[in-house]
Length: 248
Image (cartoon, rainbow, N blue to C red; front, side, top):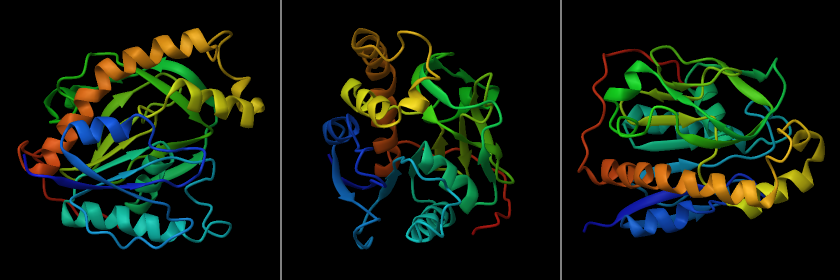
């Protein structure tokens, strides 16, 4: 099996890659973990995963290193490097390619939830084999309110429609979390109790978190395996119509 170098961008100390590391390694990937807020991004890579964090995608004054992250994500789209951007990562991808991210007008989305695949999700290389309504974890205040020009909507939810999208043939953004563990979500709830208060009663209790994460692993581990296959060249990328993307 040919090793695949997957660059994982951890944007905050409280949002580590969690279960993704084991899933990637088991799929044959070499994981290169970089913290852009503390160190330059110099690794050579075949694919990129960008994680989340509490800052906003537009907070470049307070966090100027986000500009470099946005440039890297835009470069992935331009050079057709497989990319999976999660939560804040998805918001950064949207902004970097001409979309709009704003504070969600329906309040924070926190806790376990379901997303629904859209029609184009059924023909996407990564999303086609997902169930109609897979389990996810949410923990965000901002939302992608306008997708980049030419982006494909792959999954939606009632409160915030733009839950998963693809920019170009291999640039994926997901508003939700698939990489978390129960302990990670519990730590977020303790760190940001005002946000945690928006979860449904009992949704952040240990037993409930363990249950939903078991369901997430069953569904999303094969998704991550497909991402590695895409990066290795074993899985054909999505077919896209030629378009001009405004890259920021």
